Length: 189
Image 1 (cartoon, rainbow, N blue to C red):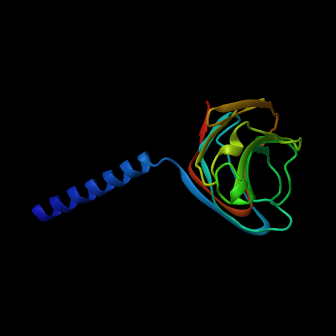
Image 2 (image 1 turned 135 degrees about the horizontal axis):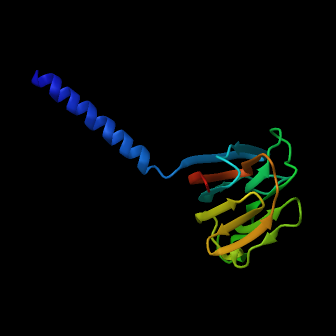
């Protein structure tokens, strides 16, 4: 009888610690590692018409390519077939360009920059992001209310009008390895 009670107590303790760990989890980890001149895309479903996606991203490594720069994009976008560009999107891009380490502000063999992007218009580079060392963890939040995307990158923020009926969170990377951590998507309702 005591062994059964002890076993039940052990099972309850194990279940509680597992539940506690799941509740404490901060989000998913996604290691987007792509060969030179190739890209990878991940479209994530959203919990409703209004939501927030947040997390961290960092450049882990560059790959020498002849066609594409190492970059990753985080966007709220209209749903599209895999490998096809969405009709509408807004978000940001983290780009890393190989460079002569003696000529970069960071002294490293790359220049990293953050920029906003929206619907194929020219990207807008965030001031001072060129001074950030490659590999620096960049925290971000994108909020969508059904009419606007509000992007927060560190201490910088900007809003863009966006109207899509079937939104997704779109992660794209090319010609390098970018690590996403603490990636969460939560309903705003």
